[in-house]
Structure formats: structure tokens, C-alpha cells
Image (tube, rainbow, N blue to C red; front, top):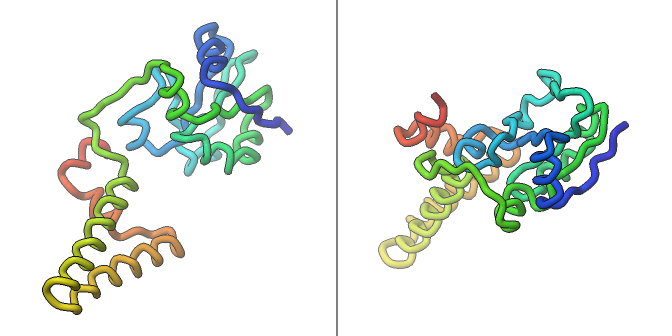
Length: 176
């Protein structure tokens, strides 16, 4: 079994530039569309095993995500997809950017759906608390409703708020 080693962004950039490695980004398509390393392959974690990871003979694989946490958490699963040497990009895309390396960015792409969920949920909770303090305590129910929805999403993997936000006009471009 291949073991994933950690690789600094500078060393990863050297391997990529020399053509000795391929960078595989395991984030969701909406995350990849907004910001990624130029030349990286988008292979979302959710369907990674469905299709073989085609890597040219003699090239190493470097896996990345936003911060490195997803790749580290799925290291065994990712290692099983590779025959040769494979790495995890230290710090992920954020580490790449911190090292001053260039990124392909599309600021017009919508925010990642989970960030939208976090913003919407946070605003709804704050609104419920503010209205509950200023107008009527019944508005605390809004915060409770959002909390229950987030708990349900965490327990089941189904997030109604994410589904609703994905249908919004500003997100249709990412899904197309």
C-alpha cells in the first residue's frame, strides 16, 4: 500500500513544473471553480473511486484540498488509488497561496455552497436572537429552528438549506 507523505508547496511546485507529478484536487466542483492551482485535476472526493485515477507512468500524485485536512482525513482512501508515490500538499490550497504561489481564481464564481450555508445560518441565528431580545421572545424559535436544521444535516448528510441555496440564481452558473 502506498503511504501518503507530506510535501511543502514549494517542493510540490517544483515537481509539477518539472512534469514529475500531477496535482489532484479533491474538493467539490464549486470550490474548485472559485480557486485552484492552475493545471490541477478536479476529482471530488465523493466520486473518486467511481473512476480510476489515470496518471501517466512515472509521475507522482499530489493530493490537495483547501487546508489539507480533508486529504489528511482521507489519506488511506487516497493512497489506495495510487500505485506509485503519492503526497498530500501541506496546508492545501491555502498553504499554496501563503507560499506566494499563483492560483487560478474566478472571483465571479459563487462562494462555495457550504460557506453560503454557514453565512445564511449565522445570519438567521443572529436575527432570531436580536428579534427575540428586542421584539418578542417567540423569535428565539428562529434560532432554534436553524439549530435543529444544522443538527439534522450533520446527522443525516442532507442539508435542506444547501439544497435551497443551490437553486438560487447566483449558483446556477456553478452547476452548469
